[in-house]
Length: 170
Ligand SMILES: Cc1cc2nc3c(=O)[nH]c(=O)nc-3n(C[C@H](O)[C@H](O)[C@H](O)COP(=O)(O)O)c2cc1C
Image (cartoon, rainbow, N blue to C red):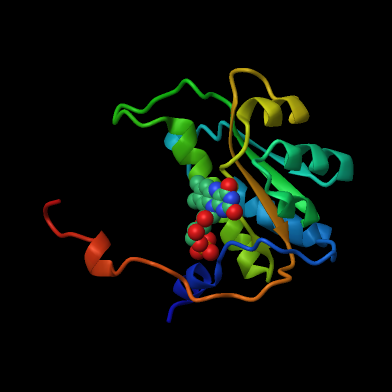
C-alpha cells in the first residue's frame, strides 16, 4: 500500500485526547502542510487561528453544539475563509473548497505525526467569530481539535468503491 493511501486510512476522527502537549516544531510542520494546500487562483485567502489558551478553548467549546471533548485537545485550529462572498464560475463558494482542502491537509499532517484530530462543523458561526474576534466578511469553515489520541481506532465505515464511483457518466 502506498504511504499516502495508508495515511488516508490512518486519519480518523479522534474524540478523546491525552493531556500531552504538542511540540512546537510538530505543530509548525502541521501548519506548514496547510500553507502548502492549493487554493483557487492561489489566492490563499485564509487564516488558521491556533487556539491554545484554556479560557478561549472553553469559550470555543461552548460555541459548539455540546461537543465537550474539543476542550480536552491541547490545540484547536480554526480554519477561516477571508472572503466568504466569492463564488467560482462553477457556482461553488471558493472559500469552502479552499478551506476544506487546507484543513484536510492539517488532519492528514497531524495523523502523519501520530496525532489525532476531528473536523468540527457543528458550531455556531456568530459565537465562534465573537470568541476569536473574526471580521464579518470572513467565515469559519471548521474547527479542528488536535492532540494525542486517548481512544483506539475502530473499523472505518465507508461505502464501497462501486457505490461511489462511476465511469464516463453519472
Ligand atoms: C465537514 C465535516 C464536519 C464534521 N463535523 C463534525 C462535528 O461537528 N463533530 C464530530 O464529532 N465530527 C464531525 N465530523 C467528523 C465526521 O463525523 C467523520 O469524519 C465521519 O464520521 C467519518 O469518520 P472518520 O473521520 O473517523 O473517518 C465532521 C466531518 C466533516 C468532514
